[in-house]
Image (cartoon, rainbow, N blue to C red; front, side, top):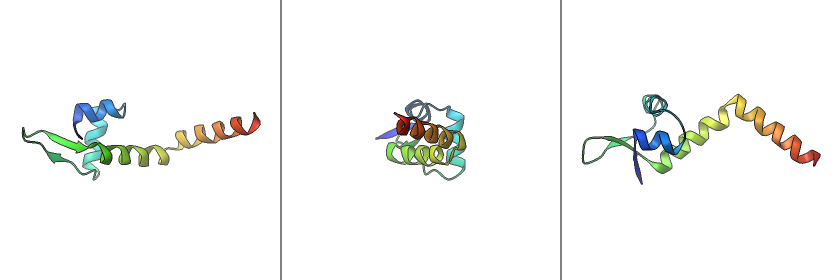
Length: 72
């Protein structure tokens, strides 16, 4: 499934600027028949997942969640 900037941003709950920044940083995108930039949903989710895993705040939340689960 191909997503426009707006659809991609909504899919991962980020802004269109974030999607544009990801594209400028190397996320592969192409053009559809109407000349709009689009990204494959699988590619978008892989980029989102990679950035989420590398985020220190997300890592801290995951550690806290693991500690909470171990305690119960």
